[in-house]
Length: 117
Image (cartoon, rainbow, N blue to C red; front, top):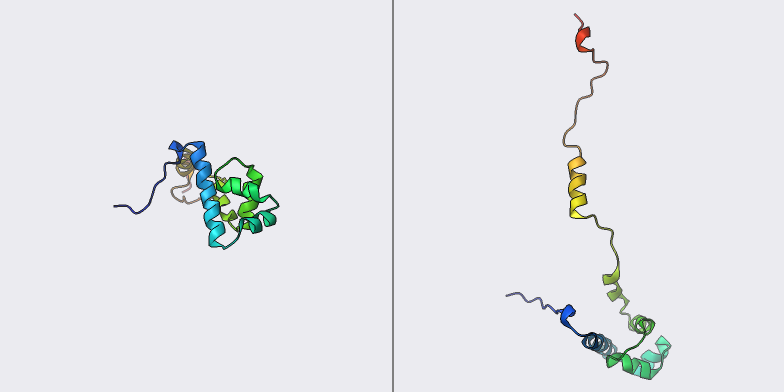
């Protein structure tokens, strides 16, 4: 069997998603042995706002970013990067236009009716 766990994010309610984010923040805060007070002061938010975040309550996006920064977790923002990708159809068109072979270039080729003897 496959050991990769799959979470069906689409089927989760917004409340469950925010609780998952809160649990993520709390887990990493505790692993770093930081108190709510320490993190909230460093993030420039109140301790109660951090507590709301960890419980999965509604907080602003900027609050989440500030807390992620303090906990050195901004690497998770990588999933939001937009990469320029070529569509498979465009790639196929490009491949079709690509040269398939080289041709000899003959300079000063005489016309058929001007054959030289």
